Each structure stands twice: as C-alpha cells, then as structure tokens.
Image (cartoon, rainbow, N blue to C red; front, side, top):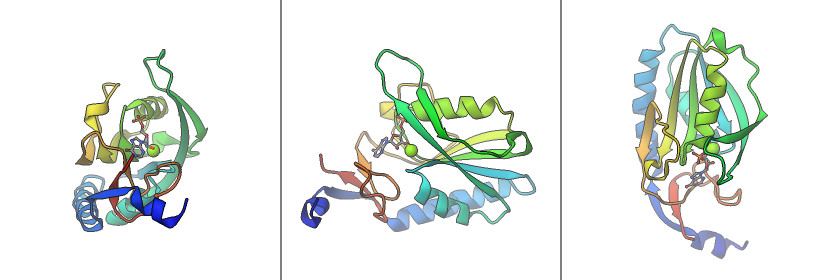
Length: 179
Ligand code: IMP
Ligand code: MG
C-alpha cells in the first residue's frame, strides 16, 4: 500500500489525542482512589488495547501489575455465545488480585463475554471492565463495560491501537476508516 492510498483511508478524526488523554486522566484519578491499598492487576487483550494500556496504566498513581492475553474469535452465525480461543493466557493467580480488564473496543461483546466468564472462574477478588470505546448499537451479547471512556456510533474506526488489516495501529488519534 503506498502512502497516498494509506492516507486516503483516514476519513476523519473522531477523537483527538487531547480528548483521549484528558478522559484517561479523569478515569485514572477515579480508579486510583477506588483501588488504593488493593492488589491490582491490569489485564489487556492484545493487540488492539496495547496503546490504551500504556496510557491508562500511566494515569494510575497507585501500585499495579500488568498482564496480557491474546484471543482469537470465531464468528460463526450458528453459535449464539462467544466462541473465543485463548492463544496466550495470563500466569498470575487471580485469586490474589482485584482485576481490571483493559480493552480497546466492545463491538458485538463476544470477546469480552468469553474472557470475563473465563477469568471469573479463577475467582479474582473483583473484576471490572474498562474499555476505551463502546459501540453499543452493534451488541449481540448482553454485555456492558463497567467504564466506557467514549461511546461511538456504528463506524469502523482505526488508530490508537485499533487496526484495519493490521495497519493504522500507530495513529495517535482515533479516526473513521473510509471503506
Ligand atoms: P467483539 O467481540 O465483537 O466485541 O470484538 C471486539 C474486537 O473486534 C475488538 O477488540 C477489536 O479488535 C475488533 N473491532 C471491533 N470494532 C472495531 C473497529 O471499529 N475497528 C477496529 N477493530 C474493531
Ligand atoms: Mg481487541
């Protein structure tokens, strides 16, 4: 893909670097208060959430540990529940931690429904889901995040960790992708 084609797909900026940064700071302050004095583990799902995780963890002013998971989803029309395979798992004993799942975007809700179900079986002290973006209009599972930093309409978005064909993850803002 040449640079001109690459750039022509970035339709318009939905959320600027500044907007993202200031909302993360707000949530970071709130959660630093809430989890103060508690053993905290942030679990992020690769690859999409890596940029959000990097900024979110630095917005916290309390001690925390960091872990990553990798999943693969199968979108079969015949199954009603999330068919999600864990390609890389966390190694921590979750019963020792209050866990926050740090996710990039909730679309159908399949990925997080499955991940939450799996992690709950391991008896964390508590479990919360923080997502940067929420597309509630696309939901197929009855799933809600505890905190969604931004709710967006049904658009395909790129940047700030989110990809289209593995590209655009390094854009510093969130943009609408031109189909
Ligand atoms: P869900 O299981 O349908 O909720 O899928 C969530 C995953 O799909 C996210 O973690 C993203 O990796 C991907 N995804 C959903 N919507 C978008 C989008 O607009 N842009 C880029 N990736 C997306
Ligand atoms: Mg993801």
